[in-house]
Amino acid sequence: MVNVAVDAMGGDNAPVEVVKGAVEAVGEDKRVKVFLVGREPVLREELKKYAYDAERIEVVHASEVIETGEPPVMAIRTKKDSSIVKCMQMVKEGVCDALVSAGSTGAVLVGGQVIVGRIKGVERPPLAPVIPNAKGVSLLLDCGANVDARPSQLLQFAKMGSIYMESVIGVQNPRVGLVNIGVEEEKGNALTKETYPLLQNCPEINFIGNVEARDIPLGVADVLVCEAFAGNVVLKMLEGVSGVLISKIKEGMMGSLRSKIGALLVKPALKKTLKSFDTKEYGGAPLLGLNGLVVKTHGSSEAIEIRHSILQCIAFKEQNIIGKIKDQIVLGD
Image (cartoon, rainbow, N blue to C red; front, side, top):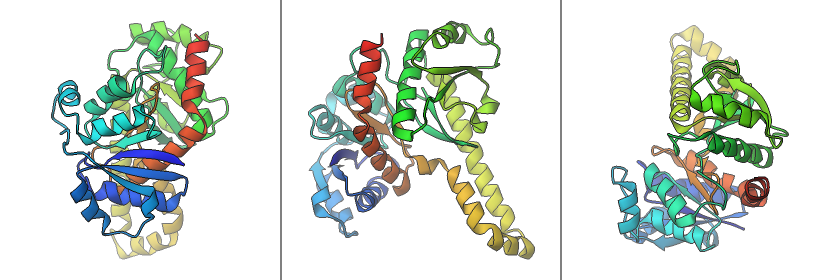
């Protein structure tokens, strides 16, 4: 059984969508048990809406909530009975294998490092979301944890990302690309120029060189390495463009009687294609390099994202990702 602590009070749609996603997750896979952490009376009332296996959803009371605008470090220190801190403690103490939160990104990042703790030898843990492309998916790291990174840290990102893609996503010998403004080796800023030879000379990864932003949707690399500033810009642009395209396609299909008839004919194939580019289908971003799994989902997450985020924790545990990262970083370095 994979035990997952869920921050039921975090996010714009909490606790309604969080509880719904948790119920859907335990209904879909018998290997997972969810601990809903938050204000117990509120959560109990919300759970009354559903039929579920009571042995696999447990409510853990937390009287406080860390709001998005609060200073993360201060909030983690002072709100000991907050849902985020309690989730972190449950992972640290081994009660849970993982936690999922749509709450304050800053609090999740700080709590992950301060409470759950980094794996020995890991310099900085990166946020690593899975993003869709023309061939399947890629792992983008970092996308929000380390705006100012060093070349040695990007090298570790590449190693951890390769482990995740191979073990969790099932991509053999994943191709690693360095996000840059040109494919030539000499292109880029000081960070990318210093990082390139480190990746090139690392035998543990399959480095293919620099990758330009326009090639990311084509799926030229399975693991995309960059510091968080560039990564966040790439991620938000992809999310925005995919959202607009899906909206415009739906709008165009409903524009006239002829297009509506055509839409009925292509609906099954179109629905499948659009679903593959919907970022909601891929769950949250794991914070790699910690002594436990921490998954951060969008603040606006709905039940579908919460469900996928919980279920992705199963493969993470079963494939012993933490153990593999320890072997790679501690023994490899």
